[in-house]
Length: 235
Image (tube, rainbow, N blue to C red):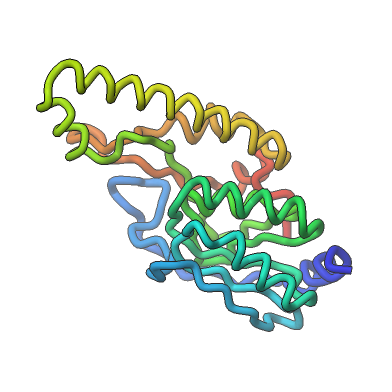
């Protein structure tokens, strides 16, 4: 029933609202300077009616309790056919968990990045959990290289502690990075998204900004979201 409602909702919502023009980010030139990804410290889930369809507005940072809250919200209202995402990301493993939950337990659910909204980092993996996926023109699907080396102060502390501490830190980073790459690759395969998204886009980004290159984010174009099968419903 949810799948049938989802297809009907997509037909109802096909008239996209044009997003206002946004100033571009000089440090990340494919992206807007101020992505509209919500300042909520924890993702809020709000059932709402939009153009005759029942949707779940998912706005804010992704935390470890998201999957359980998603399940509770969707089970409480079986008329929900879509999840609209607006998020700066959060905990990577929590995003993967929520994405797997959507695919396994809610077949036919639609995930959508509406015009003017942004879905970044761990939000990408929640979005990819939808069996039917829409990135509206003007919606921002923003990727980066997932990294364990973003905490510069922690790295400096380890280096200052001496050679043995630094070697141990490098080993831990290499191991965790390899595991994360494997998990990302497996997730994309299971969700039907092209692995080229990892190799050609995500892992091609600079992990940490430098004085020479401040760009660490990449916004996919409309052509790219379909080329990599990130979105699979074109409106």
